[in-house]
Amino acid sequence: MIYSSELIKGTLKTIVLQQLKQNGKMYGYEITQKVKELSKERISITEGALYPTLHALEAEGLVQTETEFIGKRIRKYYRLTPSGENKVLEKVNELAEFMNTMKFILDIKPV
Image (cartoon, rainbow, N blue to C red; front, side, top):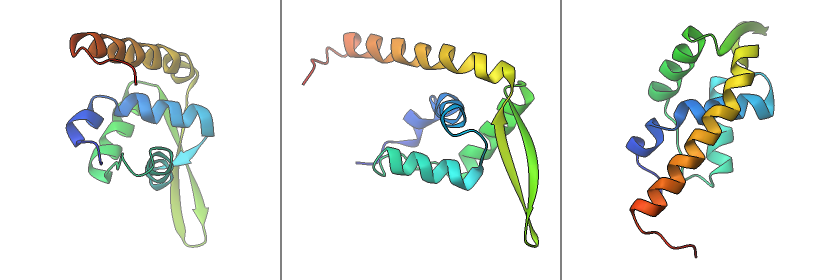
């Protein structure tokens, strides 16, 4: 089962921040593939969702970019800023609390 884009949209900043925390600098396609792999292909992040999220995180001062030349190509890498490092745990905890609340509201029992 692939999760709907509506569910992913609300968690995308948290997912991206956590991936950057765990992996250091990453480029966009690398982020999408890592998330796909970790989720056993249940979460597929499109470029149309990822890059606006990365740009928003950059505008918020949570990520910074650097470019590297790979042959004749330029690759743009993203990494957490010190503010981003501090924000990751807050966002992950917020999401965990939200999931616990949803379990209660939807009366979901542990399996």
